[in-house]
Amino acid sequence: MVLPLMPKATAVWLVENTALSFEQIADFTGMHELEVQAIADGEVAIGIVGVNPIANGQLTQADLERAEGDQKVKLRLNKTDIPIPKARAKGARYTPVSKRQDRPDAIAWLLKHHPELTDAQISRLIGTTKPTILSVRDRSHWNATNIKPQNPVTLGLCTEPELEKMVIIAQRRVSNAAKAAQREANRREREAKAAEAAANAPAEAPAAETPAEGTSADDGE
Image (tube, helix red, strand yellow):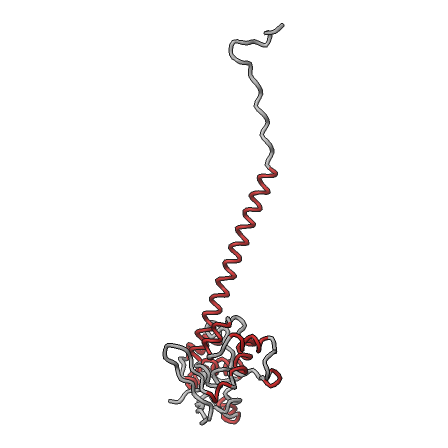
């Protein structure tokens, strides 16, 4: 069975924008019905931007409306000329010459939708360089006026699993950094409270002096 280019991202869009049943979405995207339900419940696919299968020619509006009106109708993928990215082997990513002009659009999309990604992650994901990423970010790129954010998966620069993996790693890094910052803040707060308590503690009264042995209070009279 031929599946959409980005099954999980397509499922996200269908869940959020249509009245299709979980079974219909699962059948179209090749996912399990429970996984589609988990997307609807916000338990999985967090941070994944939905992809409209109608906009990229993989589904027609008429087919969608017919399926929404009858849950027994199964959606079928239309043929499309969108390039299918292939998982790469280990090593540096090679981007075909015909696709290199699309990288600024992909960078702009990643910066917009996944700001948690580091420049190094973006470089590895679509085979670009940090100076190029910087020029797109600060709009100093020579073709900045013509850059239009486009999903790197639909451009054929990476696969959906590769993008999803990078996003998960980035989100985990951000979460760990936030937890570390909170622990440091809590530690400083405890230290400040301890110092304040020590400063406000009443000073101990000096012990009363006692006569030395062999002397009496009348000595010296």
